[in-house]
Image (cartoon, rainbow, N blue to C red; front, side, top):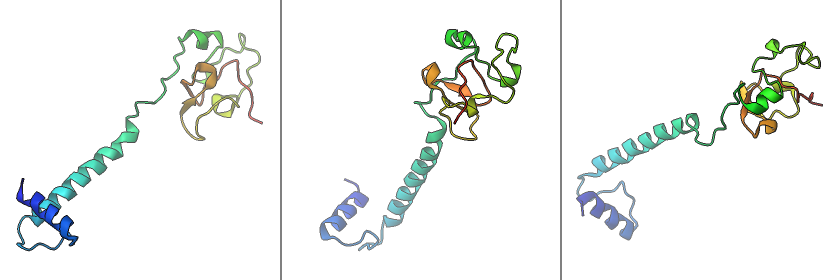
Length: 130
């Protein structure tokens, strides 16, 4: 067992604060290790939201359901002759089915199994938010 470990165990048994050291040795090393490891964990934890394993996949325009419903990732490119119900200004972000957060570029849609759709997209299932 290392000397810092023995000192910590001794402090825990005696309920003395860890900052008090009888010999004055190795406590700075112990503190530095705790701080360094804590900083590493904080930095690694800071990147965790950027790499989410549970993030839904993006809907592809080549997806069979997307093609069947006329999904277009940019509503301005909707074929108005094929989808006459499309009105300029309609897009996924203003649809009652869209589950993305306001201002986000993408968000999930239950029509497509929760896959992410472009907020600026459109499909024939569009239903204006009340």
